[in-house]
Length: 84
View 1 (cartoon, rainbow, N blue to C red):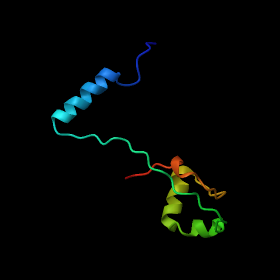
View 2 (cartoon, rainbow, N blue to C red):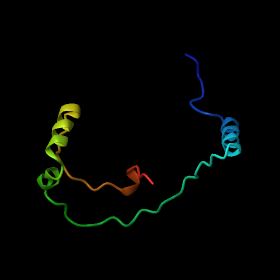
View 3 (cartoon, rainbow, N blue to C red):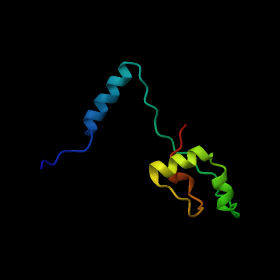
View 4 (cartoon, helix red, strand yellow):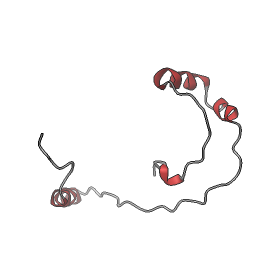
């Protein structure tokens, strides 16, 4: 087994970004987005939340992933992938 780097070296990355810049491709910088304060309060009953998911979607989730809804939890915003 050969120990190889798992990605670009810093020099390779710099060359790649310079080449993209020359071609007019601008790679947006990562921005830190501050999370809004976490809301406190009770959750609605899980049955009510599950009912919001259309039945065909629930059936497909069951078929593909054997997904079962067992609890409701509040997740920190930074644990979610945010498209933007």
